[in-house]
Length: 227
Image (cartoon, rainbow, N blue to C red):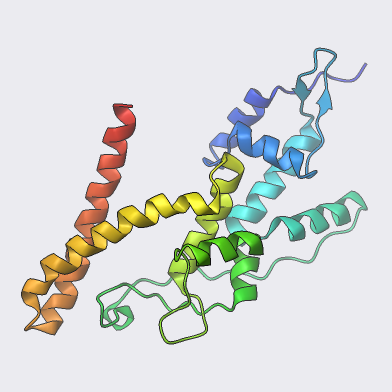
């Protein structure tokens, strides 16, 4: 008789340290996408073999370290199932430290990322339908005066791709955008006191933004703690 395998909670425990974002809903999403196929015990509960766990580990690594979209991961898994090693993914350079040269005239931090639409979709794993919705909501935009997407768009696309399996649709990020818009108004209003000295205004904007982001994170935690 075959070994009974692992319950989903045990699988979660095995992978949580290496992949903190893993969740039961994400594992079930990957199953719904056909990337893993655990067996069912007579009771109806899913039972995961060692092969299933290694398959999950490959998927999570490909997403976390290489930003591979699910389509590419599925193709790679098909090759692995046939005993063929998939081509290694192109290395992704880690973000470079933000320096003064990356600060634009509005005071924002701008690491040198220039992505085409195809590159943005490929690196984030975001479906094009979701990108269209995010653009319609004004959440993801081309870099001002260009036909490229910047690091902000890549970050938002990756976030949207991660939230989808958790039940948060692209359009629901509008709530986050509205909060950010109010914070931007506060930051720019405060920094306007230095309008006569542009070089100081840029630095003040960055410093205020950093503190506001810290406050935002703390208030989220307070809200969750008291929910």
